[in-house]
Length: 303
Length: 92
Image (cartoon, rainbow over all chains, first blue to last red; front, top):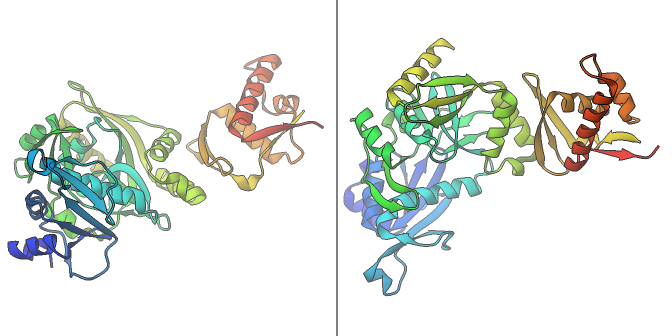
């Protein structure tokens, strides 16, 4: 059963009661909340994701609540709870859905040590994956959204999961977080993309989420192999260009972008080295999304 | 003074397109070594009895620089290795 199969009343009943057990890739998260923003956001962005039967196993148990007190009526806030405890300070209630997304990212990056977890977008074509590690503001999510709007499969916008045993990349398709000018860029670039409401004045500026394409969600159990590692950088007015990046430097970038590389010790080193050995590595500057996506199409067909 | 690397079991490295990436299990840190540093590390790990700066100069030097320049460059690498916990000097 997928979320879209649940009648609106049943979705609200699960979220407001025992919890909605939502499967994203290999993980199940039990989400509980009575907030309308959460119900609306889940219904929009996770409609194609599996909804597991109530009462089964869940990797994470999260809840979004309005903290008690007079502020609840004046300037309501939302609090993300993990196993009953809040890992973060509360934020304005209007940011409830972004808070859920940020909280889910935290759950994975802080707990999923069965994987080497890298802060990177990852997309796939013909079984070959393009890994895009980059700091905020680099245009990583915009590029990722552009690519998945034109035939690349989304594995993740934020968290690349590498299985240390096999070296496979494990999909975790979830909404893509777009910020500020990127929101309008994607609206124009991909008019068919499903975007949620724009939430203003978050810590990251204006934020809107783009729904993961249905095909990416359906194929969430299909692993991919690393093939390209690219450090993207958005620069207004710059023609799209790939410049070779040495594998040694690429390794260091990937290690620095990992949440748990140190935790994996020798195995983490070997896993990253194996991934880098399989990749062509580049630095990539771009100022126009259309041009960038065309370049990656050529890359995918020529190598 | 002879230089030794830390025990080989505490070092793991991989050559990636001619560059050496090395992980020091004692510190948990990973380093990308420039070519001379990579050659010095390799030479030290192959020499169980350790090597002096003069030994390293004899093994690695070419005609691109004088012996003094080679000594200076290798001493700088060894000092950095000591700081990073990759190698240490021992009195004979």
